[in-house]
Image (cartoon, rainbow, N blue to C red; front, side):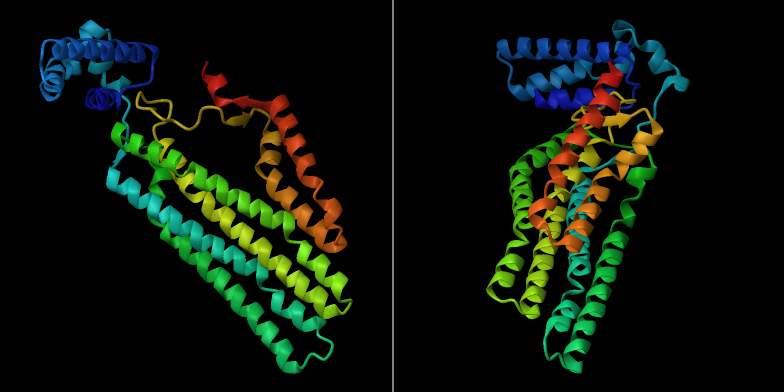
Length: 334
């Protein structure tokens, strides 16, 4: 039946996602399933049954009158072009490039976060020599150069996939099934990686507190800040890598958007959008702003035992805004 279902999806892939087409698709699917069951009960092999079902029901032009969609099939003005068909090999290549992009982009961000570690440590040494300060500055500039290099390389690597955003594209049923299975298989690993990243964020201030309590000298505080920045950078790197596969799968599955009949495994259902333009702009930068406020407040005050409260407060605010102003895409279509 998977072969028949895949063939059915490919038959309707380029037709508009209208009630008539959806009804015809369901009716034809039921007819195919009934015929397949009948042939199997008569003693036909699975391959023979599939071949006969496709030969009898595999031509939409012949079935247009029966299904009530002949006008759509015959009218070129009502045909929807599904655009470029992304193959199975292209989908795999895109997901691999997406993973490499996330790794290099995460490394660039990691170096951006730790770039000041050398200068901070050198400035806290009681008898810091000129060579020590120069070494700290060299580490700063090398880290910035690495950040720019990694970000530039990762962005250029993904340029060849710009057509996925700029051109109408689609994927077939088999490719969509593969991507959906991959998304599910990597979900648990992604959750584990995100959990580790959150633990790093939550515990990054502990070395600073411990070192400061053990030794009052400035070098201990400087070393504690360096460890804190390293843990934050590592957490950001893990968080960036953890979401790469899932984001890539979501991008590919969303190619089969709602205007087309081939919108199987669509990931748009359940997502929020905002009617109010001001709210939409605010929510697009909500979490980056919260992160910036948290880091600035924490580094200026060093009151890490208090500043964490911003995260649950931000989560409550996000939930309230979604409840008041948000509209789910699945509700919008109903």
